[in-house]
Image (cartoon, rainbow, N blue to C red; front, side, top):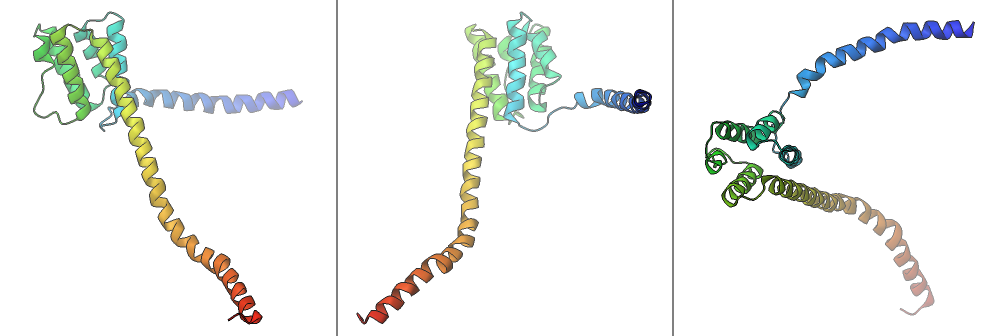
Length: 189
């Protein structure tokens, strides 16, 4: 009897769960193509790690840049796609990784400088990209630590304003009043 009841409950609950998964799976590709538009250094670092992995796997620079541009943050995606297109057409690497006047993102500028340096010196681009990603993560961790310290200082002010009067009224005033009463009763003053 119990087995039949549990089987009936499972049969009734299963189609709803399967239907929910189907709806979620239908919406996932639309959300997956959404591009990061902020200047998040961790998103840039993840993109650079992906580019380094593609280069270490043996992909051509133009192919790796085009593949990574699809999931990169918007400012970096534009630079990667432009460089991939120019490199695929046979342009010089220094020209492909050249600065554009509208690039204001400091992370993109740092990447472009490193890519031009790599093109001019012949150094491996993958190692430089990995080093830049590590530096971006370290800078993000330092900035987060600084924001946390600043928040702790800003929180201490209001707490001090709340607790200082209570400490004075409940801690210091009774002690001073008790000492003053003892001194006045003793006749020293």
